[in-house]
Length: 404
Image (tube, rainbow, N blue to C red; front, side, top):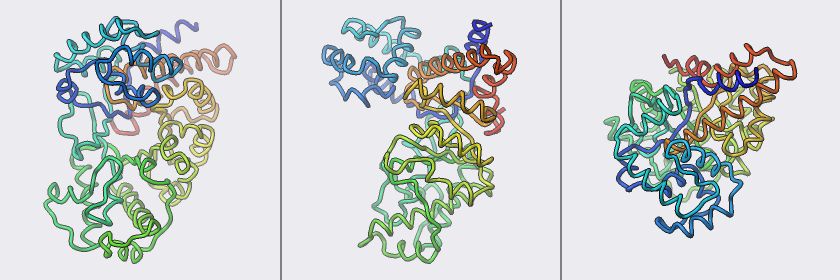
């Protein structure tokens, strides 16, 4: 029966709830190589960058992190998609993988084929933070989400979020000019309305990379006072209060529009990224459907406990399987035991299709192992296990994001 469960899960189709997949044109323009595949798979996050083309130095760097889950999942993808084993790394294998990658990206549909044919991903949600309205993505595969970080930086025309975005770029998109605080609030509201009109399926916060995700209730008069200083002489406290007010405004508007709100929690500015910081928002905005990313790692139990407490909170395990497979297995079992499997989803959270393929391969293996163990223990019936797997991989996201 364990082999049957594993094989069934391997063949399940998927809705992928979170990606940053670079457009084909961007990757192809680089003359893609294994260096780009590894970079888009988070591998250089741990090993540090290597000069492109220096395969000897790349081997040395990769051997320093040979146990990395980022590297292991990328290696699986390179083996399956390119037929090259780079684990353990050799200069010859890495160079061969580069040659095959360049050939693969001569096909304009390579990304689509990896997602749909190789990984069985029918639809993926894309966070195209490099282009506010997501130009260049393949609508056959991707549904966009609207990243709201920059909206908290409207206290100054010179302020930018960690991706270099400034909200005043929206003036031209929305054919408006911001002169007053009230104009700015209108810009915030209209940007979400435009996202809804453009069929964006959610709002996304990556604010944990910009600031602690601790938000207070702030009076409009306080935020207006900050705005009217036009960025001059502002204290860190004033900047925070302005952002707190704007985020609450965004959440009110998201609730009115029926847009779910995805929140990065966990690894980022680590001292301020615990999902426990968001309890106040969950309670205040009970009409908003929130999704907390990454299992809140390293706060996986706290995140599950929050979802158990707040029915408007859903869990997304994106990124977690390739951060720590063992943590993902702990989170999965406890999520199931808490009765939260119907509010749980998965996404790859990668920049290249190969990384997404590897991340999903790892997650399906972990999901199979957890469910097989629960069937073996007599905790679940086989049909229950398969229903849970299908829900997490496809049906929960289809229902939640209204994806046909």
